[in-house]
Length: 101
Ligand SMILES: [Zn+2]
Ligand SMILES: [Zn+2]
Image 1 (cartoon, helix red, strand yellow):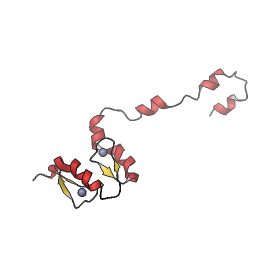
Image 2 (spheres, rainbow, N blue to C red):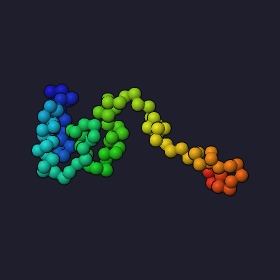
Image 3 (tube, rainbow, N blue to C red):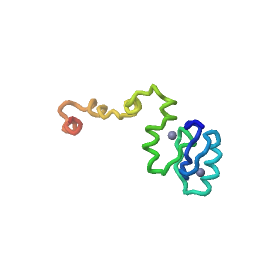
Image 4 (cartoon, helix red, strand yellow):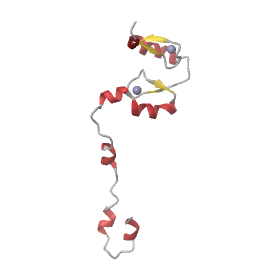
């Protein structure tokens, strides 16, 4: 058998499951184990909740979905613009000092 056709059950690593049947296996195993967080990009990726954030960043399913997203693109769109108030203040206004750094 080829390694790529088998997956380890995230609930019980001793369970070796054919990849094609992993989804069905997870439904059964989930009922008998403590809840695991489910990856938003692939329902067969499950892990303890504290690991989900790190996984989501490196998830191969996510990388396959959006390979061309440049890092920082989202931050640029959502960064607030703190310069607006300063632009409307006269040059001698004492409050202006608060905004210059
Ligand atoms: Zn299992
Ligand atoms: Zn994932």
